[in-house]
Length: 260
Image (cartoon, rainbow, N blue to C red; front, side, top):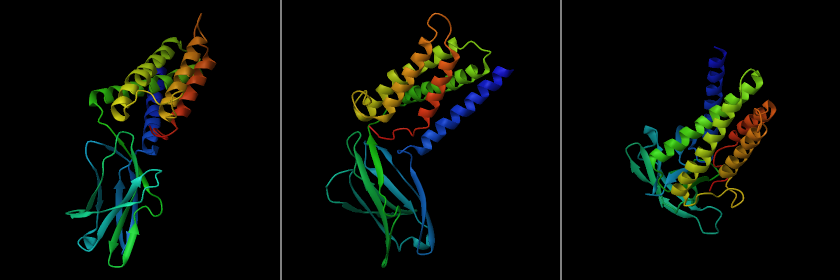
């Protein structure tokens, strides 16, 4: 019965870390609200898009602002000296819609959304632009396999750490499956996903500075060390606990923080 509760706790911790990583990542949509002409406007601006087509930017407007509010997009390539481009947004039933031009895989734009009515104007995000990254389409089965395997890897990592604390379980199979899942998810399916999305298999250390790849490498090293601590017997509990804690800390670093 105790093992059931340990597995349940591991699932809760894993789900929590996955949700945290998702919503704090730089590719998660930016949610916000502003007051314009005494009306509240809630909005969601994309920070990631497939490059099969131009990216839709939609702003839903309150009834009182429809028909009397115009909008335009101001954008340029990230970290470039190019002048800002201006694109007028079009009216639609729910409000305004505009389109950012698609970019090559891993291409990034910074953009503002401006609303104008008579002599009043506002930027939805103030002085801070939204950064959007474009990616190529990824096969859904491959992506699902990658996400599922990485979830299992994290689940077994947490469960191994809890087992190391309880001191009443054999850590060998938990540690082995953790390492296997991280290898499959991070070094087999992960590079395939990245190749589809951004055109490269690996861009972390030592070949590049992609943080997601580098995080995966550090986690793999931690679990190899944990397994190596018990080459002739069982993995040492201290090493397994350390690997589990390192994994959890790394998971709390937002996904795709430095991009590809």
